[in-house]
Length: 197
Ligand code: FES
Image (tube, rainbow, N blue to C red; front, top):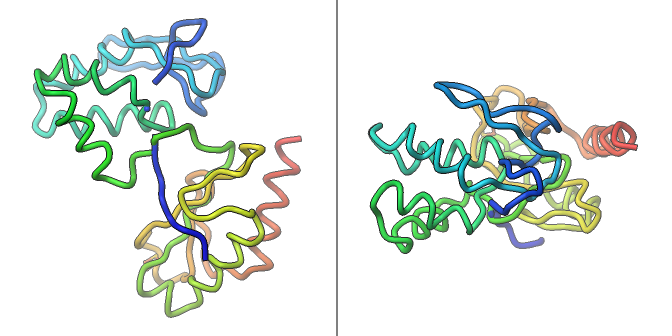
């Protein structure tokens, strides 16, 4: 079985914008933000990040809210975002870095084009989730927390998706799937590859 892990953080794109799996030409919007996104999967604009951090800094749990929004928008949390967030929140870089690295849900590099999140919690385990995970690792040639060399797939372990009645379950690009079998998983992987040609 491969080792599990998940993670990443922002870089400057030519258009100077946040990015990470977001639709090309999309925007960051909300509460006065209307920040253009780029198609560069590892792009990130410090000014866009600063605007997000400034908007959220007075909220309870601001650091987590900011990190969540960064990951939601970029698909990962770039290391270069740490000093920007630290400055806005008046925290040390070590404090921000510590939180980013403590929570395995935060990615430290851009995810693949498709993200498979396989549930490995109790109910799914009882219905074959471990064997399914081993199959997925073999099929994709990666372990949990890893991305295929062609950057098509990222595989992640999660612990209960609230879909226990349909174990074993997974999220594929945010869509729930249940009662999975190795064959069904293979079909879904093949569909993803076909759709991205
Ligand atoms: S244990 Fe897998 S969805 Fe709940």
